[in-house]
Amino acid sequence: MREMLASFKNNPKYIACIWVVFILFAIIGFFSLTKWSFFKLDAFVIWLLACVAILYLSQKMTAKKAKTNWIMIILGLLLVLLSLLNIPLGFGNPPYSIGDFSILLSGISLVFFGFKGYRSFFLPTILPAVAVIGFQLYDKFQTYLEWISKPLIPPIVVSTTFFLRILRANYTVRENIITYLTIPGETVTLIITENCTGIWSLGTFTISCLIVLASFPQARNAKSYLLIFIGYLGTIASNILRVWFILFVGYYWGSYAAVKSAHDYFGWLIFSMWVIIFWYVFIRYHLKISITGKNTRV
Figure 1 (cartoon, rainbow, N blue to C red):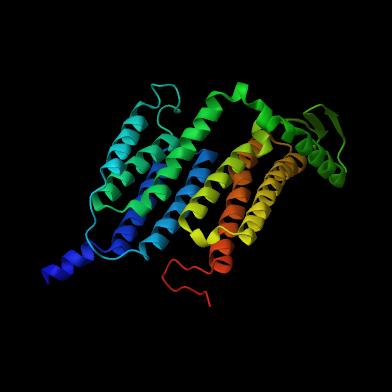
Figure 2 (cartoon, helix red, strand yellow):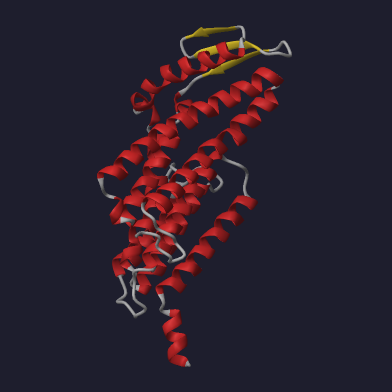
């Protein structure tokens, strides 16, 4: 009986399920205790894919005691320390953001899997932290990196004016500033900035691509790369739809509160729905993988 219990505790599938439950409860708990931010949706998408990757990788591991990986443990402890010092260093967002919390979760996960000796779990658990650090570095040096997102502004302006023509709205355009008259008779001004280009969504999709490609070797082929390219196009399209949705709300309701709600809450749901559906179809029907262990590949 003792041997069976020890074997069960050393079973990678059991350990992976426990970790997934812990991550989901930790993120949901953090969401419920902190103010809303659209970065939370980005973090949730990335962690959801990390959970899928861990569950899949655990199916390919044997239930035997592995050697402790001290590199993962040390790196995990450094990430835990970074999550606490990130704000004093000037990179995090006070009082404690989902990004800092994601770094903490990555650190704890690396320490946990390091003690278990699960080296194959390294990439899915560290990439969320890498994504946060990358985003925070971009945000910190955004002034010097505007050239990345500036070319995306004109297409957003063109698509926005196209949608206004469909609505038959009276509008004027001056560079990246769009002013239009709403149905209630109010004037709304939209300023298309670098943050409106979908650069954050593209970054989130890129990190999700790295998680999938690192966790599923069978995804590294020409067909997969073509589908991922379509995924990038869909991400750009979802951002355009987000801007259109904000525009639509402003045109019919003409209320600043309604426009702000559409911008801060509902608009980002479009990207989240797109990326979740895309990766579900990609993993379930292209790779023919089920995280329940029933592989549908023939």
